[in-house]
Every structure is written in structure tokens, then in C-alpha cells.
Amino acid sequence: MIKIVLIGGGNLAYHLANQIIVSKGLQLVQIYNRNLAKIEIFNSVTKITNDLNELRDADIYIIAISDNSISSFSKKLNLQNKLVVHTSGAMSLNNLKSNSNKGVFYPLQSFSKNKKINFSNVPICIEAENKEDYNLLERLAKQINSPVYKVTSEKREKLHVAAVFVNNFTNHLYHLGEEICLEEKLPFEILKPLIKETSNKIKRLSPKEVQTGPARRNDTETIDKHLELLTQNKQEIYKLLSNSIAKTYGKKL
Amino acid sequence: MIKIVLIGGGNLAYHLANQIIVSKGLQLVQIYNRNLAKIEIFNSVTKITNDLNELRDADIYIIAISDNSISSFSKKLNLQNKLVVHTSGAMSLNNLKSNSNKGVFYPLQSFSKNKKINFSNVPICIEAENKEDYNLLERLAKQINSPVYKVTSEKREKLHVAAVFVNNFTNHLYHLGEEICLEEKLPFEILKPLIKETSNKIKRLSPKEVQTGPARRNDTETIDKHLELLTQNKQEIYKLLSNSIAKTYGKKL
Image (cartoon, rainbow over the protein chains, first blue to last red):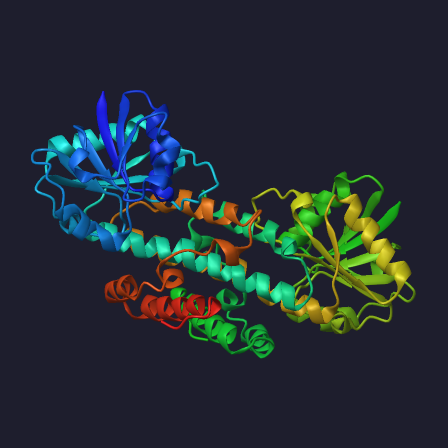
């Protein structure tokens, strides 16, 4: 049985807590959050506290708080010989300042408040200072059914940037597409099957192989026509991404 | 029964032909292609030809050839009182130069050679010069189980640009993400659940509402760190898209 104390009251802490509670071999012994109201909901299934002096004994202390607070918060922890991990994609292991063993347990997924998450779709990137702790984190990830990847802090930073490209930036492109639809009084629904197909296609094929469109074909006539239809912000994005696509295939527009 | 002659030997013509053949109320009376070899496969189920003088009688002639050939090809058609449509998102109805009734039947989807397509996931954007032809095209779309949208040439042009954003550009972002993974010797698999979740999220929620990430949070510290990790091309894209996200929410980075 792996005993866990969870620290945080946000989306990730909420979903992790729920998953740990229902997973065999894991025991959520406590949740800590500065603001008790946010974790009140777990009061019936585990201990909750907002007092660091009352932290209970556990094998792993999982910090799921905002990136910028990790360093200052972890300084306050006095957990010698215990394993403390953070869950951030952007922060290195050394951001943990606790007098404890340290590790990282980064779930590479986007969590929404009201959407149930299936942890078998949440790759966990793990890092630890020693083999024993690594194995413990690996066991934890396996108990919640997540695929596990060993990723150093340096690689994880890059991976986090990659996640910004495929998640945050992609979502923004969806938004720009929606904006164009709304300007034309067309429902965004009309683009959704294409969005689905685009994301489905790369399940088995590399995105480099399946690239299509005017920039891929070097179809400068269509590109020029499209640029004329766009206002400044979208125009700049269209240009830059089209050039980047052309470059990828050894062309210049 | 709607009688159809299909013109073209590419991906779209191939998938359309297969769908028309299996749909009730539709009869594929002929396929034309300059290069007979490309449509040879349909020899057993319909007439095929590479001779425009041998075009058979039909209610609708569907031109599914490359955008740049539509104008010159349609000039050669002598189909007075018949309905000729093209299938292009980028070309206006007036690109058709046949002495016939004209229309547009634009399937807003990405077609791959070896991937079977479910036409209920292919929105069809329809345009015609008169109500009767519009109704005929609408019936055709319904017979192949596709959702129908009435879209003028002007709106369709914009819609085509929107499709470039959510399909071609999104796929390129996937490629950039994959590139970062490969540079770090991490499998692209690690990003796929996130890609799936990102595209799933907008099924019910607007992309504007669900935007996350450093640019959305105005987290300039993370943005600067990310920019340092990127080489020039990705750096420019990161900057421009981050600024665009910030602007969307009334901020400046």
C-alpha cells in the first residue's frame, strides 16, 4: 500500500485525489490546501487540513499547486527521508526546496474542472533522485493506470514547450477558425468534422507525412488570395505558418 | 433517381464515386478522367471514359479535379440545360465556364487515399444559380448522408481559409511538436493523448472559453523560458501565436 498526501486544491489535485481514492494499492491519507473550502468535498473520504504542522505520515507527498509557488512552498516542508514530488511540466526538479528526497510526477494532459478524466489517457513523466524513489513513482503511475515515461528535467522542459504547440496553440487556431465562421455567420459546427479528422489522422501516421494545403503544394496563387481575405493578425499568422510549412518540405514561398 | 456523371480521378472523385454507388436514389452513370488507368477500378460498376464527346446523359455533372484546371476544363463542356458543379472550397461558382447551369458541391473534409470516409462526417457546402438546382444538390447531399450548408462563393472562400487554420496549420503544429519530441529522443506517442483531448474539448465548448497555457495566463516568465529553448523558426511561431492569444483576451505580453 502506497500512502499519499496530496497538496493543492486546483483541477489537477481534484482529479488526482479522485483517482487515488478509487485505485487499489493506494491510500490517500490526507489532502492539504491553504484554503480549506476548496477541499471540503473530500472531508468524508480522507483527512483534510490547512495546517502544515499537521501533515500526516506518508510515502509520497504530491505537490499540485501553481508553478510559481512550488519553490517557496516546498521550503516550508520538513519531511526528511520522505519523497516529495511536484507535478509541473515547466519546473525542474531543483525547484523543490524541501529537506526531503525529491521527484517529479508530471501528468502530460489538460485537465478541466467539470470533465471526468480517464487516467489511462494521461501519460505520466517521472523523474527522481534515486532508483528506489523512481520505482515508487512508477508503481504509483501504474496503480492509476497511466502510461509512464522516464523524462529528465531538461527533456521535460522541452516537452512542455511541445505541449504548448499541440495544445494551447492548436486551440488558438481553432478559435481563429471559429472567429472566421462567426464573421461569415456560419456555425462553427461546420468545421468540427474536419478538426476531428485532422487529429485522428496522426494516430497512425506522422503529421509530416499527412500535411496538405496550399503551402504544402506551393500554391502561391491560393495563398495570396487567402492573405487578401484576412485582417492583420490572422494574416501574419497565415504567412508565418505557411512559410514554416514550405520550409519543412525544402521549399520557399 | 438522380443520375450522376463524375469527372476526376483523384482522392475526392474516388471516395465520392464509392459513396454514390452504395447510396439509394443515386445512379453513377459514368466516370470521366483524362487518364483512364486511374478510374479503371470502377470499370465493373459503371461506364468509364476519357473522351468528352462520349459523356452520357445525367442530372448532375460533378467536377472533382484540381482547382486550377476547373476553369479551362469546364470551357470544353457542352451541357446546355444540365447542372455542372465543382467541388472546390477555394474557387467561386463563376470559375465554371460551361454553357450549363452551375453550382458548387464542396465537401469540407480532408480526404486520404487509403482511409475510408464516413460521409455523415463530411459537411457539404452547396451553392446553385437557381432554387431547383439547389434542391437537387441538397437531395444529393442527403442521399449520401452528409450534413448540408448553404454557403455562397464569398462565404465559402473565407470558410476555406478557416479550414486552412484548423486543418493544415494545426497539423503543422503537430509536426513541430513531434520534431521537439524527436530532438529529445522522446516518442511522439507521449503527446497524442493531449492532442486528442484538445480536439475533443471543443466538441461542446467554444475554443475561446477553454484556452489555457502561459500566454492565456500572461505568464511572461514561462514564455521567456520557452523562447530560450527554441530555435529561430519555432521561436517566431511561438511569439506570434502567444501574442495573438494575449490579444484575444485583451492583454499584451
